[in-house]
Amino acid sequence: MNADLLLTIQAVATLMAMASIVCRAAKMTRETPKPVRMQHLVMFAGLSFSLVLPALAGKTALVLSVLAWLTLSA
Image (cartoon, rainbow, N blue to C red):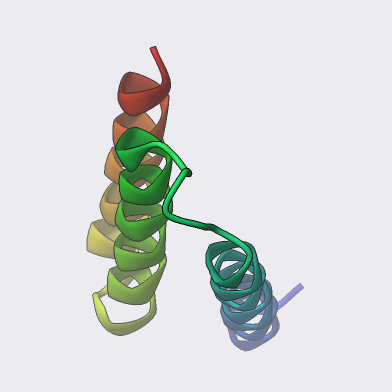
């Protein structure tokens, strides 16, 4: 696989994940615990940053967002 194809796959998968988070957030109510809402916000931010940052920094943004997600759910 060439680099352009991999970047395209990453971008499409990232946009799909962002759309999923938006759909999940739309279903949340006031009764949804704040840490759960924060998890979705942090993951959306990490995905967003991964689209605009250089490759290594983008991966770092994703790893940090997953780490924050897991920490908030602990």
